[in-house]
Length: 34
Length: 241
Image (cartoon, rainbow over all chains, first blue to last red; front, side):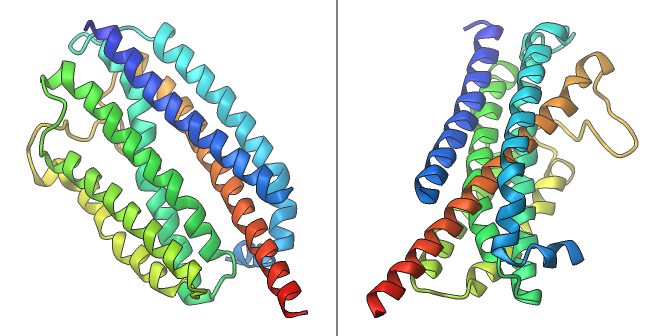
C-alpha cells in the first residue's frame, strides 16, 4: 500500500468512529427524551 | 466552583445543555471539515515522513481526548466525593464511553501510522502500552459505573476508581521521557514546537473541532442518562401508586 493509502485508512477510521459514536449518542438521546 | 453549583439542578442544567448541544455539534463538524481539508490538501508532505505526516491531524486529537476524557472523569469523581454534586455521577458515566472510543481510535490511527513509519503495526513501547492500559481502565470504569447504577449505588466506588485511574495520566505523558523506545518524544511543549509551522497550523483546528464534537457527545449522553433516570423514577412512582 502506498503512503496515501495509510493516510486514507487513518482518516476513515477516525472520522467513521467519531461519526458513528455521534450518531449512536444522538439517536439514544432522541429515544430517551421522546 | 460557583458555576459548577449553578448546574447542580438538573432542570437548570438541561436548560443550558439543550442549546449548547447543537452549538458544539455544529462547531465541531465545521472545524473538523476545515481540518480534514487543510490536512489533506493545504499542507505539504514532510521531508522525512512524506505523506503519512497527515495522520497527525487525526491521531493527536484522539490521544488528547482519550487523556482529556479521563481528566474529565477525575474532575467529576472529585466533585462527587467532595461536594456531592448531583450531576457528577451522570457526567462521569457520560464521559466514559466517548473517552474509551477516542482512546481506541488513538491506538488504531497510531498503528496505521506506525506501519509505514516504523515498519510495524504494534510494539510494546512505553507510550503504546500505557495508552492500551488506559483503554482497559476505561472499560473497567464503564463496567463498574454500570453495575453501581444498576444496584442504585451513590457512585462513590466508581468515583474512587476514577480518581485512582488518574495515576496513569502522568505515566502516559512522561512515557516517552522515561523509556527511550519507538514512539517519538514530545514535539509540542509550552515553550514551542519542533513541528514546522507549515505543518502545524491545522492541528489546533483539528483539536478544537474534535473537542467540540466530544463535548456535544458528552452533553447528548448526559441528557440521555437524565431522561432515563426521570422515566425510571416515574415508573417507580406508578408502581407504588
